[in-house]
Length: 490
Ligand SMILES: [Fe+2]
Image (cartoon, rainbow, N blue to C red; front, side):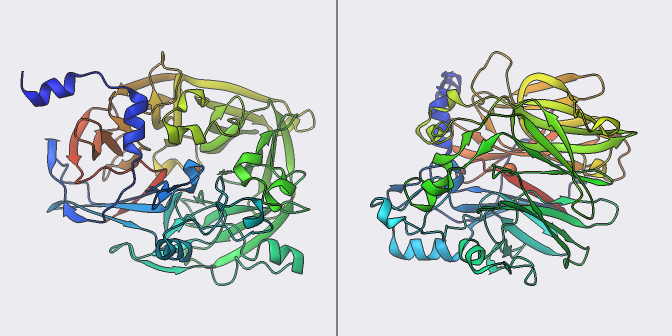
């Protein structure tokens, strides 16, 4: 047995693998990736861009939460010459200031400025981590972070071009107090595109005495042509929303922040986030206007939705459902390689009967016994009925949500296909339809992975129909798997 294969057969501790995969990215490179398995499909042409925290520390000072890591972009360009790879950090003004000072200067979602509460008292200028996702719309690539402005990125060089307030739409024009608390309106990392009109819908949650939901629509040319404000009954944690042919759907899960605690600088927001009593309230709004229909579901917590659509009088919403919000501190334990206590979400279908919104009963159906998160579908089915979804997943017997595999779920038959790459880790898959395809699952899945034997990142190209590996490429360095990415067809 060769030394290499002996190394590859040694069982690895997944917590250790997870920790190593999250070591900081120290270099920014431009290279062509070697194919280490299979062959690149010649019809696969375009660019995959991914975003995620590239480092969880600055010069030895650790951030307090995985969501606080500095935004780091990976770009993979599929061309006749192979796959060109490039990575760059997003140069936000906070990133540049902290790099220059070589220490933490700003608060963040789960990080206070070191030095005690007086250093954080009424400090409401948070670092825009620009680390959550990327969206290409109207020829502009934005790196997104839900607490602040999008950053415009050059789609080729990955240079950070500008903070973008969308022509002033993200300037807060309300009272002095509200402008002091939130001068720039939040713009979530999960915009949803209407495949018919090309419009991009998004939202942001504004904290304050009167918490509010900001609702945006950008037309196909990128202009913000609709901005609405909906006062919320409570300030919770809302990361994503979903869109149907006629509606916008928001889940107000029973979560709450302790506003005085973080205003006074005693704790960062994430440490004050907690479960409150009560059910999940589902808010259904038309595409235009803020007339709300409310539905009531069991208490739960949801980071991500898969898709939503209308089926006669029913609104169908697929999501990765957790029984409850992860307790404060549990998510941060990931940074110490202890994610065992994190809830393992289950892909779940919520069925809302619009004929029965007074009693508000919502039916729930679990779609797979596997844990699943970061689900994707064929983009032709956004806002429309879909049958298949693909997500990161974990084997049935594993409690901890280590993402060592990819899961394909058939919502029609409620059957699952799971492919485990253990001890390799896998990130969010992106579905790319094969040119001229007809079948919903005729395409490729692109996912970044982590190869613990070589301590490098890898790029997987799988057949979306059966999860067979079409091609695997090695990256020249390791890179945390990040959160979300986007595919830009050639
Ligand atoms: Fe997300």
